[in-house]
Image 1: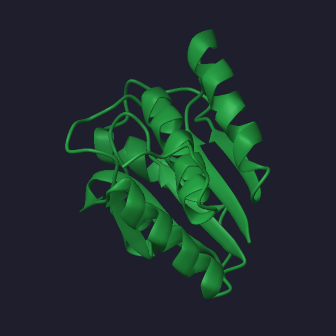
Image 2: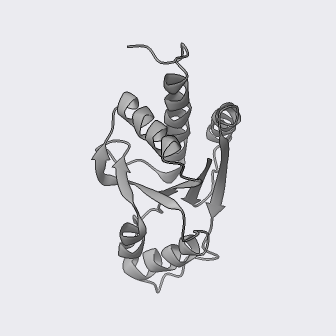
Length: 157
């Protein structure tokens, strides 16, 4: 299985970037994992929030394959415990999903097009985080999921 994180924007904070790289490296010991940053060339002040989200959706949709299993990370999604998230990851592996794609939208959220393309929607929290923080929280949780699956000592109950 290959796991891809599609994320709008870029990381500007060196501390976050270093931490994300650390967890990405750790995840790659278990599975082929990659982060793909997606940028809008320039945010026009003339665009409405809906137009802006639709432009981001077009950039995201270009990166998706028809066979991808897509999970949108959005505050409106299902809340997961770390244990339940690890069970979901294990079930995707057991089902033989070849490419699992997680999406983190931009500052205005995701468009209906992305919601409709998603096979599942999960939430990292009921709180709203910046896309930069959401990336860090996600990669840490993905790493944690694999340590739970492998019964390693990282996660404590």
